[in-house]
Image (tube, rainbow, N blue to C red; front, side, top):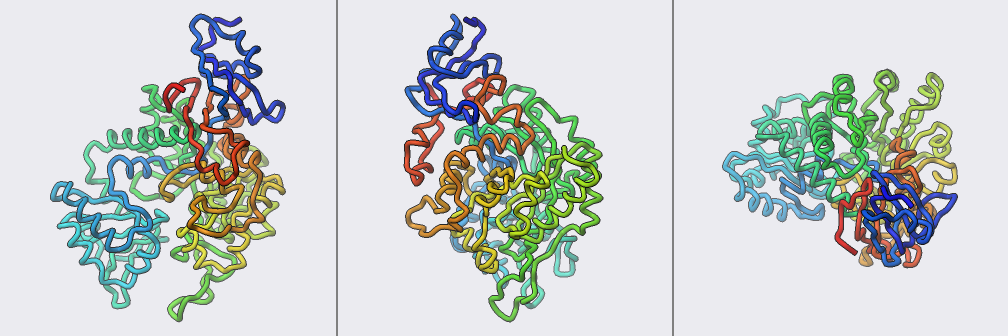
Length: 551
């Protein structure tokens, strides 16, 4: 008997995710690590005088979940500080919400928030709505984010603060929106959005304090869903500072892997080589800035994803040959990967179009020829992959980061699919093929691009390819569905492996971090269509309960 055991969870149905022994009854924990897994009788031998014993009441226990693509600062700020609206909000509802929020702020304070759904964004592009946003804001500057978080709608006061008028040139890979008469619409696309984010951020007092609250709020939400390992998908220095501060104080309740933008992103914070040099100072046991981030293209809604086939045409104003832009040349990308390699970093490529996916794979292929295996590479989003490229993920050791959680019919997915040729849409989110080719498949919410980082919706839809909402019919490419056990592995072991933490977490086995969750029901005992009703009654991180109450 060990008298140093801190915690024993017993009378459980423990799904370990360990192929050698999938099920157990009890877990013992000491110093944040799992020390024993087995029958209740075996683990009882580890109970000492000071051991906390938790009776799980026969409930399912499984490893903590991994979200390999989320935006902690954006999501946390939205929860803690900003105006939040559903992506389904109409233009009238948006203006009403802005007006109501404005009354809670000081006369000169920025109104920051979202979401402006893509249909509204399309409506705004015709012009004539800037004055309405000005009236709603009551003289305050406004910046509202769209449902992709790649574009913004701002008002006249904000444009003035940014120094933008009708003669202002657009930044590289950005567009300053104008109507057919050349008048500003207030829309800022892609990198032009950074101008608005910079202006709003510059007006914040005690930014560091706000950042800590935002990050802490975001991670608490993640813990409430059972998530204990997170890859922040675009990590700037303020996020690194907040994360390391929380870790120093013992208040960081998840593993966080950072992804450092290779070019400026959403702000004038340092990026690229300057950020690669600064990041190691913020490394902690639970804070690991191990990746760079490359935005290879944009988003389908604004026809800035890079496709292998032209976009659908909806009228004479659209180019029938438009396949969307690539934001990096091949040579630029290869040179940048060499700099990442020198800095000891892997890379995550934002690639929403199949041509961008192909560019990323081509770059990794050349990199592997030069340097061999070792560096971790992710291609993020992977909704659209050319059939000839499916086998290349495993062959090149590239993780398929499936994000956001929209591999089932949703209004958001419908907007995207309205721009993309049906032949591409019909083979979207090809998870079955990727797994059959032995690729590492991991998933991320891309929150707050989706309203919630709830992983149980994602898990259900990996199996059903249907929306849990019974009012939304149909399936998205149902031939790409995977099994329950495969889906659980995607959210646990594969996520840990993708983040470079495969020896740390993702499996309930001795020696791994004691990151596990107690569920309200056994996933293997309920219908697949009920999985979205799963809740984490308790979440444990490094042996400490970070969510939930006594069972």
